[in-house]
Amino acid sequence: MQRTLAKDTLDKIGEEVLLRGWVLTVRSHGKIAFFDLRDRSGTLQIAAFDPKQVQNVNSLSQQDAVEVVGKVKKREGKFVNPNTPLGTVEIEASKVSIVAKAKELPFDMGGKDLLLELPTLFDHRSLALKHPKIAKIFKVQAALSSEFRKAAQELDCVEIFVPTIAKGATEGGAEVFKVDYYGSQAFLTQSPQLYKQIMVGVYERVWTIAKAYRAEPSVTTRHLSEATQMDIEIGFIENFEELLDALEFVGTTMIKNASEKNKDILSEFGIEAPLVPTKVPRLTLREAQEIVSKRTGRDLSKELDLNPEDEKEIWLWAKEEHKSDFVTITHFPTKKRAFYTMPDPQDPQYSLSYDLLFKGLEILSGSQRIHKLDELTKRMKEKGVDPGSFGMYLAAFLYGMPPEGGFSFGLERVTMKLLELSNVREASLFPRDMERVDERLSGNQNK
Ligand code: AMO
Image 1 (cartoon, rainbow, N blue to C red):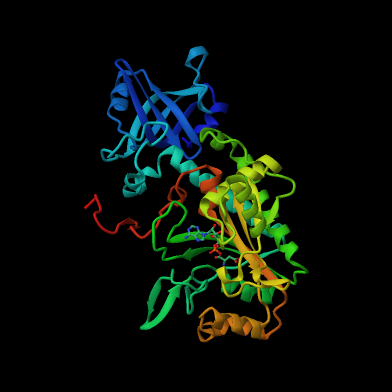
Image 2: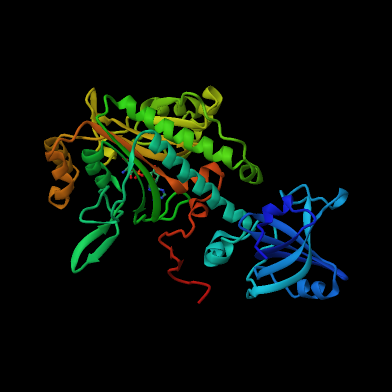
């Protein structure tokens, strides 16, 4: 018999089917027994009335991989479960067999939520990821990356694949992992930045989804040591605004489309559709700081950036004034941005840079770039970056680099905010931080 997916049983009332999946919860009621079976398409109730099958069902444990043969029955009246998409049917099992037995679980996976501390969830990641609610986080993440890809293609960008081992530190600063590269020093890339810029000289417009490594010196709810960046870089730009238009287009369409395609998951997480305005409000950093000062009475005139509290306040402002969960902040101080960032010709203390905030968190950063070689090497030296380590990158500026710029979204941050998760680690399949790489670096409770 050919396998039927759980979701297709709705069209097979009265038919005999073969299902394969995992056991979620078993409910024994003496002479009858039930269990929920999960496959890639959904979750379905299996019922056993025949004594032999009741015995088989009672011997099942959570996460056993099983095969079921049975008849699809329509559930009527009070037997319908309105809380699940396949709640109008059940399978009356004629044969239940175990394909792969699961070991006893360290915690109960049967509930709607996994109410455990994050470290416990990460200590048992291979299992915890199988919980339907956790698995849904990464379905939304897959939708976000897919919508990013579509938006990038709509902007006529070409996909590129870039290295993650580099000769120089791509973003400068101390947060860089060193690699012993055949006895020479190399680094894990902090971003695809240098490669995407080089590729502007080839294709004009490029996109990539790449891993970025940051030796973050502390554990926060917003920082991972390995993050996924979704990047775009655009050449022959006419002005700074063109970059703002592009990033707002990609950010809003990606989040809007991914939300619309996953309405059921958003509602399971108790989340309203994001507020996507037709025009994203834009503020310079100074304007944003003035708004926050007015609203909170805090003096931000000496601050060089927005702190997490300020970002939240700006979100409240954007919701009230513009019905928007998005705000673009521009013109950060030149000294706070990476060496490739173009200073504003009107006021070089500030730069042609931007962040996109979504629900009060920076999900994107970028800038117009310095595209003239002499200015670029001058800035590198001012920033203490050795041009000698960036020979291949700088060579791209010898051969006709047009005015250009770009941006990068942090995939885990977008996922975290869209689903209103409290920690970015929950939006990373296998989160890395200073305390963990796969397993805890010390005091691992599995040991
Ligand atoms: P930036 O360093 O701001 O800019 O990174 C871009 C976006 O990536 C995400 N992000 C992170 N997410 C989780 N953990 C981290 N440690 C982390 N670091 C960054 C954020 C951030 O907005 N090359 C530039 C981009 C550009 O100019 O095109 C860059 O990397 O969402």
